[in-house]
Length: 238
Image (cartoon, rainbow, N blue to C red; front, top):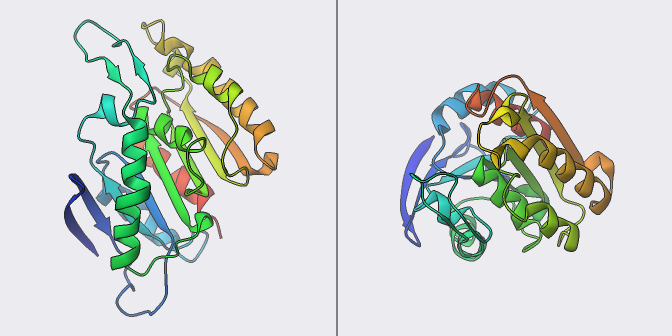
């Protein structure tokens, strides 16, 4: 069951409710996806896994008002002359998600509200924002960063100087094997930075079993939906 929720604090959110939502009087985990991703394709691919090897969940995608603002943790220069600077609005975005959007969803739908049942996933810069949330709030007990922009200026240094709020969080990382072949010198660091992120988190989290790094074939835009499915199956494994 799909529907549109308009303007939760000026964020356009698309909602998915599981097939038996109206028939069963139970509460569900909630997966929040940073950015307006292809919800229909993701749901069509994963519904057959529900209650077999994946917990059934409510899904909320949150459209970004400004990608380079909402998902960047602090200001940084643009990647090219023709693109915008990164203006560092992730704190504001995550505050809205934690304090306004999530409470709205919890108040209007049957959700499991605890961190272990609250999941956030993002792709590219949206994946960086999911990891940034680890050091700001303990709201999300499961995190997915898919092809995350972990090349971002100062990211590794930030991780090294801070600790996750909730060190029992489960973290899924993935990257395409060809992504570090970028002609952009900053983006070309993504493979090395992803491995460093995995190494740092392996020490910061309570158990090495709480983190996964999966390498995919192709570049940044290869089989994006399949990468979402892989992340969800690992994070929501029964």
